[in-house]
Amino acid sequence: MPFPHIEYCVMCDVVRPELDGKATLLGFFGVTPYVTIGIRDLSAPTQLGFVLLSRDTGEGTYKIQLQILDPRNRPVIATEPQDHELQPGVRQLLMFQLTFPLATTGRYLLRFLVDGNNHFESSFEILRADQVTPA
Image 1 (cartoon, helix red, strand yellow):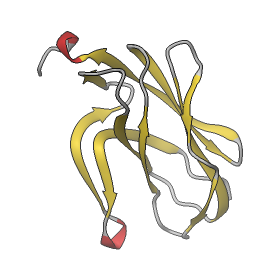
Image 2: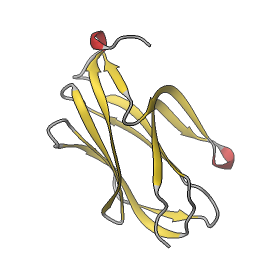
Image 3: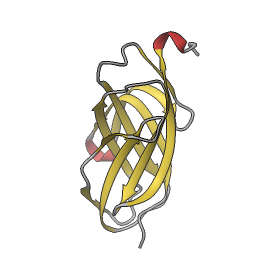
Image 4: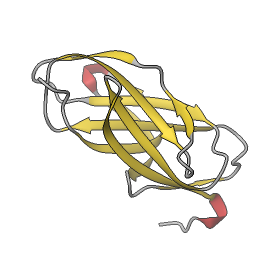
């Protein structure tokens, strides 16, 4: 059975796993690709949380990895491939908390890989904080 299709990626400041497969999200930015984040200091490392959600279930063990590429398609950060076991009948709620430098403004690419293959791709925009209009 293949790895379930990822439907959404939610972005926030911090994501924390909780009991019973739940997650606490702090500083909700939105659902990619409809995310624009204002950063005050691009030279300082930025902490972001990513939550990937599936509608389907699956089973088996897979190597998963998250990659972020800058607006010029250069790698910014990638998690180490890690084993992830799917529980039969359970929808996927995959959480990643990353701290990484953002050298420039623009549209960043988010890639989720399963067994080394691109499984989900989306994007988000980084602007200077003074360029973002409050909602």
